[in-house]
Amino acid sequence: MNHAKFTLTFVAAMALFSATSALALPSDREKPIHISSDSADIDDKNGISIYRGNVIMNQGTTKLTGDIVTIYSKDRQIQKIVSQGKKKQAYFEEEQSSEKGLLKAWGKTIKYYLDNEKVELIKQARLEQKGDTFTGDMIEYDKQAQIVNAKADSANQGKRVEMVIQPRQ
Image (tube, rainbow, N blue to C red; front, side, top):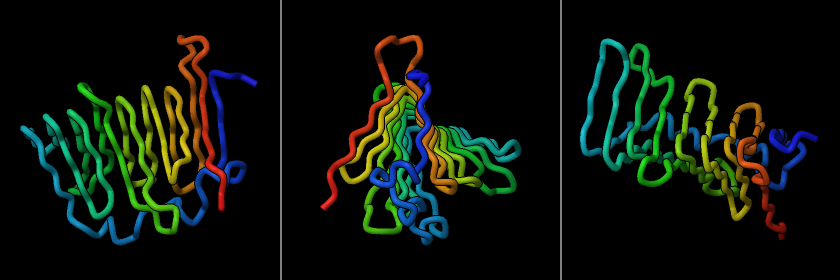
């Protein structure tokens, strides 16, 4: 097995995430987006908005933070959000639709694709839910397909993808 690349399906790791918790609360996408930052540059014509300085974005139970957050939209519909952490890691959290509770994710860069419900965590990536953790250099989380792909940094020998699964009651 190639230790630099590790693929894990939710079917094989139901202890980490269950199928019923893969999607956010349905009401979240119907709520307004609130953004606070130190500055904002908005280009409506090209559909790009850049927020800088301790950016906090909320929509319902979904939260995204970073030093720089860039929102890409088309026809006033958000397609992708990219959060970058310069001073500290970017952060993503979302309340799940079952007893699984809060999904938390960290990375130096977080890319969130709203149209297909994918989240990419890049550099020092970490995904956590109810004490279960999944770490690697890069984690791709496809909420619709219920698949996690994680990769270790091949340049950093000895650093591998790691997972901790808490015992269930």
